[in-house]
Length: 499
Image 1 (tube, rainbow, N blue to C red):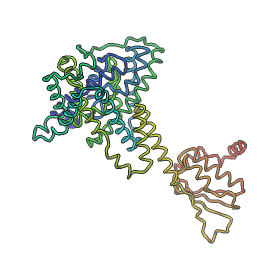
Image 2: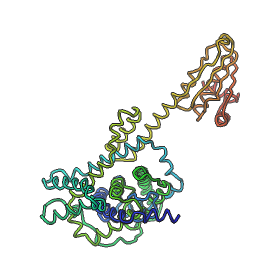
Image 3: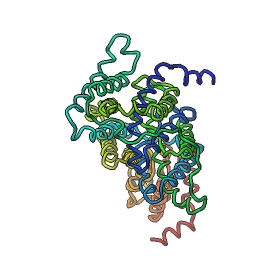
């Protein structure tokens, strides 16, 4: 226990503290932009980013991952804020936290194992595209200075690490931000800065109870929004945790992360902040800047608050071009370039799932819908593949070919996708006295499979053929005994009466 605590918190102190500065700087314009999307004051997003980062550092299940106010969550808040105001948003944030804690105790984080690699790859590529697209407004209808500074920033980010000694000690995105800010101030270049995004708060957040009536009507108003926020927040957090797991070659506790996100959102709602979740962009910045432990997440939140409250005049001077360069670096690093060459090697079904996830997420800007469609397609392709592996063989020998009995051997998985094929594999018109169906190499999974078996048995019996079922494994026998009707005369009569 103590060893894990030291590893999570103190195994990478310098790297975590430096990475936290870069993440905090990158969080500021994002939090302001997401506040504007949701229709609330910029301080709501900034307080949320501070609060969520600090709390999740202690309660989360994935060290080194950054959580804060996000665009995916902000999009779900627009209608609630417009129709009912900020106080109802704070109440919805608290309820979102409660629902996420419940999801953690129900171990819903374990459902991530049903998300295929192709869906994760599509999710990553879609987010990389969205991160890049989000920078385009800062690069349109601007002077040449912005383009020059963005290119210079990318040059610093990618070339600085090659410098001896110092290149490995200080994160290059931090040098990019400091250098471009200094150039802007020194030469008094007229470019868009962080100060142009909105007013920064000048006071610390305070604990407050959402000013809403505590009755059923309030619950009915906020519950639909809270459920949506909880689902999207957990989905994005679980997907981001999976990506960080791969980048760092470590494991995370998905169910603890669900609870941690819930606690962070509850706490944030009482501090006047909006609901948030894990951020893949900032998490990538953290990892690429050398952040690995929980200290980096805590530092990012604390630095953010200190900067916006106490260093506002300096912070406002940071050119947006510097942050655009950092986010373009994140987009380039996030995109799975290997997935392009893998299109030639991977099966068509895998490519369709990946591309569908990318397209739907990019078009709708809704991560939940994209991932849901991806998982659904992957499941359908998998079910279709497994259904093709079910065969029914006629094992009768040549010497017995003219006898009045026949044995069928079923091999594979019988379920809803293969049940029709199972029925069509038998010849019901052949005049036979006895049919033996060997199920020792088969497994029946659901009610559709049992219903198919009932139809086969009943059809043979209609022709006057005796049917013997042999070789059922225990699981198959249990489900057939429970749901099958071919050995229950009264049920068979009802079934036949229905036709």
